[in-house]
Length: 188
Image (cartoon, rainbow, N blue to C red):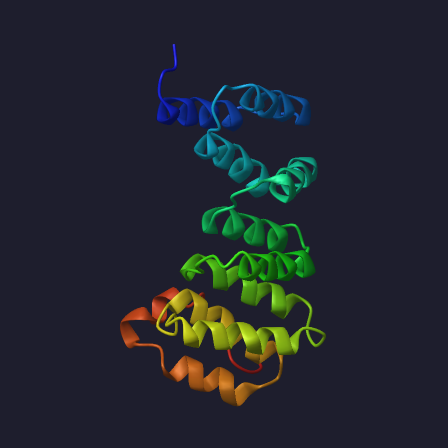
């Protein structure tokens, strides 16, 4: 018998990994809702699985759960932002970030890489949003994160702002160059 919240989260995680259909996912979620206690860790496990799935029905269900969830965490927001980008829904990723700001949650290094990618996916319409996200990166001190910088370089290169892209590239420490996803500036 499962006695602790942590054991329950582990059990839910193992069930979701074996999920093949939306009905199975809904059954797991339904069982979570019937519990006498609120297990946010188990619900987070379920939502993370659904948001990362390549099954569009699973992601749609994750979106529904997320929108109705109270007490969302930075981790959940980051999971959904990444999921929206992977599901080719960059505007939803940006709206999710705006909600994150409204909820006054702390952003971390996992927030910005997919968010910058979302801005890159819908250029030139969201050029200003990309610039604002870059300002948040600077303000929060994530300028040294090679993955974030790599996505910013790509954003500026796609935006045809080669000067800024080159400046960012030149600021990457030599020991971190291998982490930049092979960014290429200019024609091949």
